[in-house]
Picture: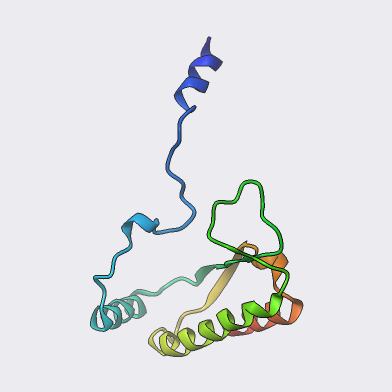
Length: 128
């Protein structure tokens, strides 16, 4: 009877935590001043290396379990534009965190199997 009770208890939909913070906490109430203040605070209190999670929204084929927004395509060159945007974002944010060091990088989504070896090298070089 215990197994049946567990099945009944967990037989409904629950929240998915595919990102942190979860999308339900995102809002447009942050402006440039708020961002600069948050970066200054982070720079003052940054004592440990960073762990990064990289998830580019491209896959060669759809997984049976994935519910992420993703572009299914074999055309790997499409990821170059996202990498270009990441370079620009890091150029803007990087100087605000001059002491930041990356200790770990986790790959998610289609990123590990979709990117070409050259795109992976480019991504690693910009983040480390």
